[in-house]
Image 1: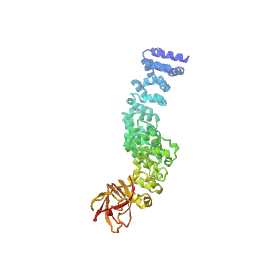
Image 2: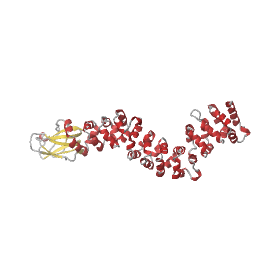
Image 3: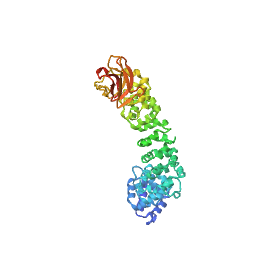
Image 4: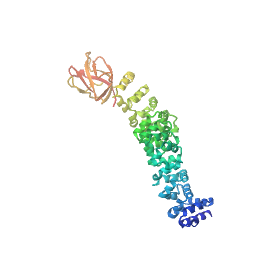
Length: 480
């Protein structure tokens, strides 16, 4: 019976005969639906997809619904993913959107229903009414503000908005207000320090790129002990930040980053943060660390932590990082490589990485560190003696033929059996190990330890005939 009566109601509305009011059926429908029984029947009607399509197809019916707050609320309350027609018809109507935007009751009905809210915020008329929408959801007086910029840049207003989830959701649903918010340091400080508000921001796919692109916004986020954990814990936010170099550098440089590194890395690479207690657990899990190494952003985050680098230096999984070109873009620097070399058991692992060796061979700091601390290891892996294959006149440069383009020398002597020393000058495109020097006196009777890095090495000898007897003899490590 309720279905039949609801259909009769719809027939009456369509005909403009609701309660006998032909010219203005909306108020009549409003009065009609104040009866709880009639309202229940209207809800029955809204549950029927065919009938909601029928409503949407009739301009008379939709006008009556738009002009009845009870009917409008019922439509938005009953909308679901499988039945959006009536609500969509309202959000496509400019007049209806204006009416809804100034009605806190209807706005809150929409806010409770995710499907209705989704339709509402993509209406072509949403931005036109954004000041009224935000103000009414926050229980503010819209007329107190000249426009949406005035509203969203007034600290006292925003201090209230951040405490109203629906109002804050309305802010981030608007590119206009989101842009004003992100550009204003004072406002972003208020938002960043409110857990609910910054969580809404962090979850917004549309707004996070705006936030990441704003220096003011990021400055407030990285200094906030409230915002940093939120940003690290939500994949959408940390991924958006990682795509903007300045924003990501700021994030990684935050004093709060160390406390959030585990969540940051997990959410950058799509693994469950709950599976790991600390970042050290990620490092010690070969599968997880491999995923990190294959991610530029996650590798950068890991490399930015001195504590994580120290853990990695002693990890049996160090080779995963050292042999991955993506990861080594961020780990291939003097400071990090020296940390790895400081653990003796990791030195062979470092020398198993061509990228790491490329850093060492051009670094005065690292070459001298190895000379002082790892000479025994260097001697254990150095080549047999090598003599250059080409000779020129004394005092001219000779290409050191027969060896790789990048070498770390370990031992040197003259290629003869005599005791008289000759003075050699060794150069190259890059020479590392300045503490030892490049001009060296060698004889055939004494082998000298000379740990130096050379790229495309050259040599010359001063003052004596250029014969095989005065060629230098090197024992080295291939650093290419």
